[in-house]
Length: 318
Image 1: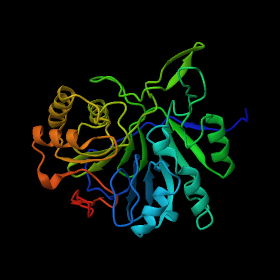
Image 2: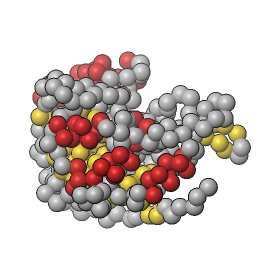
Image 3: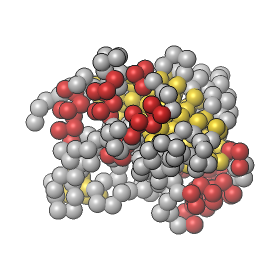
Image 4: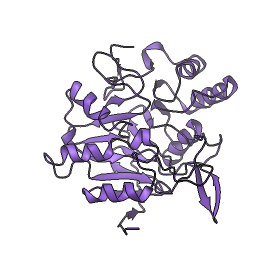
């Protein structure tokens, strides 16, 4: 095994009681739905843009998807230096290495700092004990690490809430309070030499502080949508006004969706942009129960935009 240097940061965040408008516009670059030349796939990625910087949340599955869709939407990804990976699954990490290689010539720091939660680099296995990493297209996690660090990618591992930029707070690992972890079957880790089901301890989300409260972004929400909303309210007691991304409700029963919707209504949810693994049925049912208006509900597609004032600009397929 090639030794590498992973800088682990433990960061204590001091929050201001004053809430400012969001500085970031959000554009969906990878999810299931696309047309007019866009590429849709089972994955998620979103670009956050302010006047000062651009940050990418997740990198899609196929190495070319985010690059293609960004070019179609005339987004300059060479400005992206910070990347957030919500968890290790390949449909969120698959584009990282190609993105770094594509843009490092124009900007040496492009895609060079990658923020992951503790547990991200745990080796995964299948039920027979064979390597099943699925991380960035690699089964062996060390192959992924070596390929990444070789081209100048630095991984920052966090184990608690972390302020990545002004008004952008990473949750770090999310405690399981209300719901059990939403797992992907067939992934295992080793504990004391024995295979045990992977509960995705590395699942993390991004909280964006806006003048309406938290805006929550998840890749798959394996830690649970209610648990994640609870985490951000523990960080700072604000309404969870909005949510965007994948929330792994497409296989959930109606009873589970109803419980989630009631909880989210109590958290203050007023806007939902589902995508990836959320499921159209689940998003619609949550909107009905939580009284989310049509203007504030989107099923998300390539090119869907959330403005700095939290207005949904819909893509042509919505």
